[in-house]
Image (cartoon, rainbow, N blue to C red; front, side, top):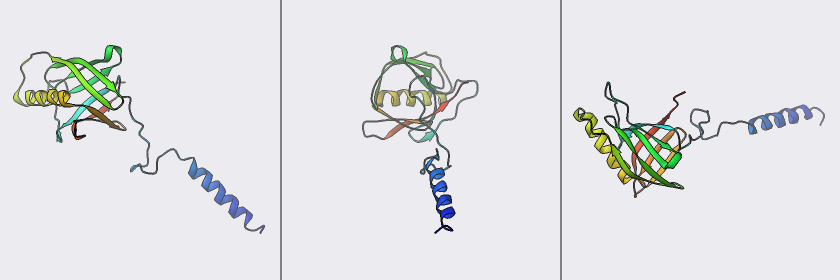
Length: 152
């Protein structure tokens, strides 16, 4: 019995140490990525309707920021500046009075802008996983995918 006491002590210490791990078991890379805050985060648009977004040279990348003050929406479409407002209730979201500047851009940026604005119009919900944000339609299908960008 005395010979087994160190083994039991070692096993107990091992179990305690394993129980203190901060990485969730289901994390594929073994690191923990907490959800970014939805509000006051720079969300870079990375996909629209499943297609990857490529920013045009000398154009602002498509993005949005949901500001807390007055539920204000700001950002860029890849061509023009974007502004408006939003209403967030739990995981539901709607965008209102969305407007853009009226600068003409190459066809690729204009196509991205039109699709981005349509997605904001159709969005009714949002889902976040770590630093990834999706806006969803009324069938719970993704319209857009964003990634959080830390500016400083």
